[in-house]
Image (spheres, rainbow, N blue to C red):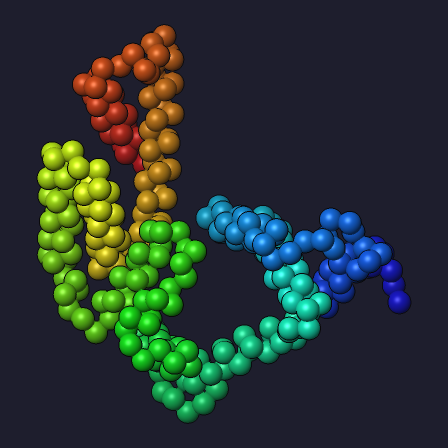
Length: 269
C-alpha cells in the first residue's frame, strides 16, 4: 500500500481514511477532540468561502474551497460513525435515494418537460416524504439558522404558494408602503417596541416583494452593500484629496457628495 503522503491522486475514500487516522488515538491532538459544536462555525465559514469563489468566478479557488467544504462533511460524518450512528456510505445512500425519488421524470415514468413541472413535482414529493400536510409545516421546516433575509424570502415563497395575495407587484408594493407608514408613525411616537416591530415587518415585506419580483433578496442586498462600500471609498478619497475629514461634512454636504459620487460610478458602469 502506497503511504498517503506519497500518493499523487486521492479519492473520497482516501479522505475518509485520513480523517479516521487524524481522529484516532495515534492521530492529531486537535482533530481527535473536536465535536460537532466545536467545528460548527467552520462549516458555515467554508460554505461562505465556496460562495465567494463562485461569485468571483475563480475555478482554482472554487476547487480548493469545495475540498474544504467536503472535509467538513467527512469530519462530521466521522464523529457520528464513532458513535455508531451512521457512516459516510449511509450519507451517500440517503442523498442518492433522495435524488432518485425526487426525479421520477428521470428514474420513473412521470412526465416533466419543463423546469416549472420539475419544481412542482419536487415540492410535492418533498412535502409527502417529510409528511408535511399543512402549509404551516412547510414554513416551520425552513431552517431557522439561515441568514434572516434568506429565511424571510423562503418563508414568503412557501406562504405565497397557491395563494394570490402577494402575487402581483401592486399588492407587494402596497404592503411595503403600509409597513413604511407604520414605521414612520412608530418613530413619530418614539415608541422603541413599536419601532422594532414595524422595522421587522418592513424588512419582511421587502423580502416578500423580492420574491414577487423574481429577485434574490440576499443577492440584491449583497450587491447594494458592495456598491455602498465602493461609493464610500470614493467619497473618502475625495475628502482626503481636499484635506477634509469626512466627519466634518454637514448633512447637506454629505448628501450632495454622495449623490455626485453615485452618479459618477453609475456612468462608469
